[in-house]
Figure (cartoon, rainbow, N blue to C red):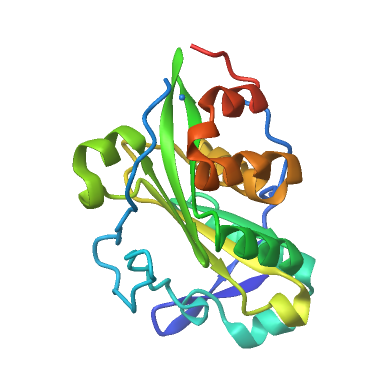
Length: 235
């Protein structure tokens, strides 16, 4: 059993036999688009702007972890118990939940500091659409590349991800929460696939070479290499 904050009181949530996978192998099912030449400047409507990064991106101020869970009771749980509770709590609530070891988060943070942007094909129906990704720890922002090309810095993210590091040292655990901003654009399963896939490109050494090429050697980047990596047809 786990206690979660519900207003000023706590409500009890029973644990279910469900666990979100964190870094599963991705082999699943977006036409070749021009790579954006400038940086995104997103901020989710209603979120608080904080100091800007050098690129001009205004980061989201994530919902404090202690407004979601009872931190004192969470401290009493093992890393595995807390990860299970986190997954169960978010199931069916319009969020995507996951967790990872702190060393993996540190690797993602380190790699994203110099290679923040990438493109991911998302299979929809009989074809794919290209998603534009910005990783700026502790956040990931994802929107449609066509929306970004049409609206520029006014393009709103379809999906946002926040990483919580409060238990990174004590439990070697980082909690991950994804929020689908536009449910008309993404389903829960698509958002989960995007989260897993983005993480895999930053945490897998072979896949990360494509991320580096996209950010550092743009003229050498070939979108078909991403398609081949994900075993998607080249259309």
